[in-house]
Length: 244
Image (cartoon, rainbow, N blue to C red; front, top):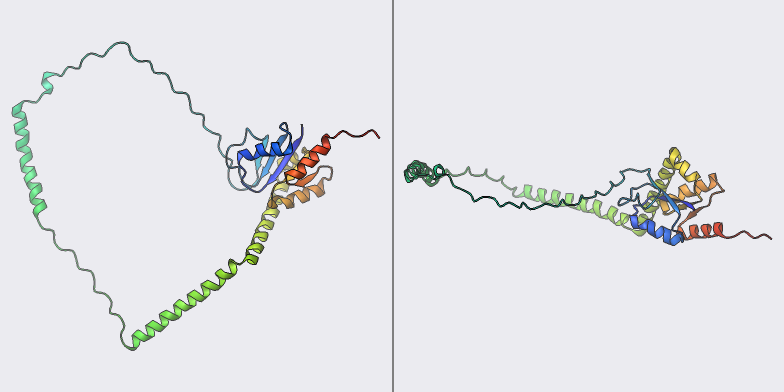
């Protein structure tokens, strides 16, 4: 059985690890993952270990719903309901209640018919400037608007250009790669897991820097980029050695 360690800085779904086994051509491999980002769902049944070294938390285990209990129907029929005589109101009592409610209803109707006082009128609008003042205000407003538009359009055009996007993406990837590698070095459990690996695989650009450094530290363990290169390494390990 081969032991494979995956280095990743991206969010991986549980189905990805099934694809890893298929691409590596070995369903019996042991997969350990060192991830900067937690997987998208529960993966304990897909990998041996998943060590999260970045921000966030691992997904919770799925909740198993209990089976519904079987409810047995009672065999005895319930007796017919009986209305107590004292529960039925006398006609005289009903008349008395209506007499008490009538004055209250009259008071509510009177209150509803009373006109409400008019609302306080809103304050008068501030008089607009006229003459020379109006011209000065208009010029100042147009100058401020032109300044905002000019300051907003040029940076946006620069930021959305292809060269700037490429450079920003490269810088972000480089910063993540260095942070990921520093976190790997600071975790003894991660280094112990890597030491037991037969092949270490960097899955994305953010993990390349860590993979390169691991290859320099331990030349006996192949560190590769991507699954096809890992498949070649595993096939060479399984190939019989010639006696010549």
